[in-house]
Length: 210
Image (cartoon, rainbow, N blue to C red; front, side):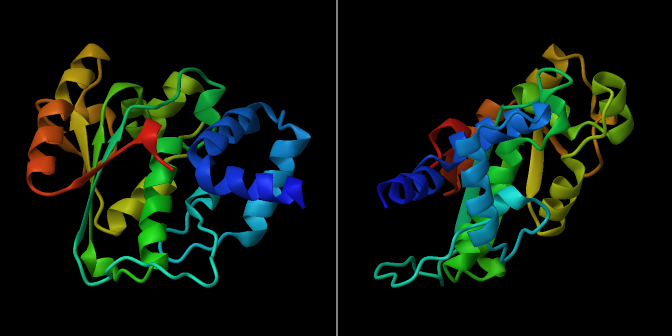
């Protein structure tokens, strides 16, 4: 029983960090037995009420909820994503920053928020820009297909706005032509962080998610 409680605690409260570790090890097919059990448990329990492309956007239903959010409010969500592939091994899996966006959207939908009340903006800077490469450019760089594209396309189809940081693009020697279509361009991610928070968006930093 104690082992089960610990597993559930890990899934709920350390999910992004567990997810990132599993994604990284999945690339090399070296999951520990514990991680494999937790992944199997998540696969069995998770539902995907809105964003469905990736396993890791799933949420676990909870019975007997006593406190819930006001589903009639507009939910303006701002994501700052910097994590990205660092080598050909890490390039073989989805970007955990992007799957976390889908998971948080699914959490809101599972709580009863109608899709029309969700406004989502994603600021992409640092190595995460490589996850936005076209499939051809991604293959040239990492020798594998860009596994992020189906999820990104689904997120875009749901109205999610991706904005690339112009400063990071220049530092990384990338251009907008290297990226997939329908990506916005800003002078910097930092100025967009200020702007969207002043407009009432709630900021989610990838390293502070629960």
